[in-house]
Length: 448
Ligand code: MV4
Image (tube, rainbow, N blue to C red; front, side, top):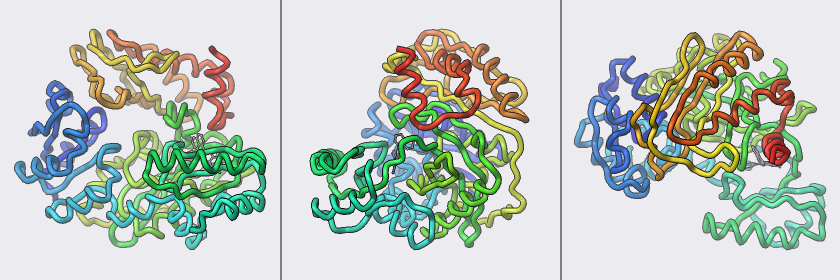
């Protein structure tokens, strides 16, 4: 049993992890940069260690500083949150060498998902559905062009080392293939120092549906249903919900079982998410696996009643999952709005002093945030400052509660994306649940 853990993160996720640790009777150590001296997570933790300059590369991303703080405080385990070092296999290795438990998957599982081509080879073996495409080692332009013809246009060229849409090119016709390939390779080389690509059939209007999985170190693995994260702009999620609107139970089971097969294929342990793109006709395909706890995990917690951070800590302590698949149930509907310190029209960052603050509350309303009146949002980090999560027994009920909670939320002193969420909440397509990954960007273009 851990008696003290260190949280190698900041902001809302550091606060969220501290809350669960406290509930479990585990002492917490925060780490903080120059800019975060006055941050909420520092005040909440039992101890706090200053680890360096404001830029993340001088503090939250420095493995040795995190491990030093762990050693000095006697913490037995590190929770990495999301971002920063959470999917860094080298960090997970360094924890093991230092005799500290990394609250996350084994480094080998992180590495297995680092290359899209290698991930697809593993998933092919595990019979997880893949988008028709080519993910071989031969990278000669002639061969790739021939493969594109076989797949059928439009195709999507993806950087194997890519993420967040970097090094991706949609190609409509054979004539345009070679130029697009050069462009994708150039971008991949510049961004990832690796120009290996794969080619896939391009799906024009899919939904982004991801499955939460949980595995223990004894071979147990369950799925905790899906989240629909299609409401996104430039690969940044804006609203997430669970369950996915218009999902039928048979497809849910198929996707859940595919996600468990994916996790088992890489020897996964802990909380993970298997991302799929799904078509209207019920077909779905593996995209990638996120080997961390995700920003949007609270919607899964709301519909399952589970505390995923508690489960992560228990699994890291070596306990087996207490739940069998048949025991995992979900009920009702949850929606999360990511609230950013940004101009709601231009998305330009808007950090600064929080002059007034009132967070909504009450039954089935959850706010995960490190904000308080008098806090100064630093310009150095991600602009997400709060997550508003609501739960209802139906999607309509959750939407009503969300409308009320957004109205109640007061963040004075800076621009936030609350007005964007309010506008989205009166759009009939959003209300019907009938949207794809293209929907928000098209909606924003119309509003301009
Ligand atoms: C795709 C796709 C369409 N067809 N693959 C974007 C980043 C990476 N996670 C995978 N991505 C996509 N892969 C095929 N074959 C469309 C996207 C995509 C996307 C996927 C999920 C959520 C938002 C997205 C936004 C643009 C493109």
